[in-house]
Image (cartoon, rainbow, N blue to C red; front, side, top):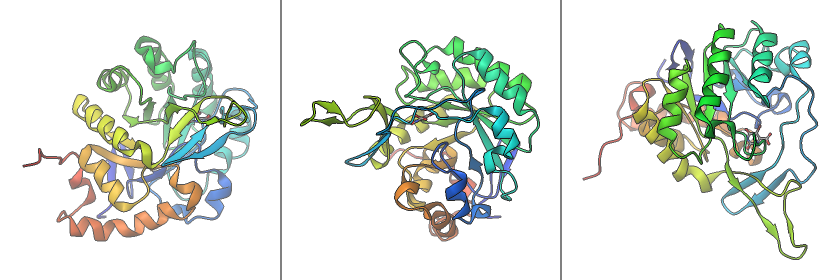
Length: 301
Ligand code: RRO
């Protein structure tokens, strides 16, 4: 079809999927999920985790801050509940996995086994989970160890979700490619915070959080461009996407597919609407297939 895209061996009916953590089974029940290119689960850990204290979300101008802290029921429950409730929705499922050490990531991959999922997305970039003061992907050797270990354990393609605040997104994307990643997702939320001046407190229970939404879109676009120029594997764009035009911008900048996160909080139907609007936009932009837009950015006159 006009909207079909490829992420390596993974074929998607269209380029639109939710960002990890932004689309639980509850929202899925209210949405025509089979219209999406894929669904992406909340990051799954090996064991149960409670997540951070409350005040996990706060609105800021142009976006949202979160300090959710990856509550997880653990991989055993995730399997028991049919991919955490995402199985059987008629849409490819991408399972986001996390850990505090390489062994933990590998255990999740081992126990996931072949569970009917279409891909794994390795989360090496949660801003609310610091591996010794930074996200895991700031240490490219540690990241590669994690990713290559997941790749050998997975029959399904492995995506790697990267941070926005790296010294070089190009170097990190190349490292993920060398470790066997089928695609990189660029990018996770940006480190941020909001201050309540009356109370002399952070607006978030955990003090700092991850910034997402329209405020980060130009930053994410640039990172997508840099990553796409650096690697031969596809890039999945993520950061402030809320319309069909935004999707086209990310594809032109070099993304082969996109993730929608923050926009789904205010507009649960936003992804379905974007998918509906994409054929007309594709036609208006003068290409036969939406995939023909990927990486077509030219220098302005
Ligand atoms: O759960 C979270 O706090 C969280 C995660 Br795992 C992530 O990868 N990105 C984010 O903004 N929040």
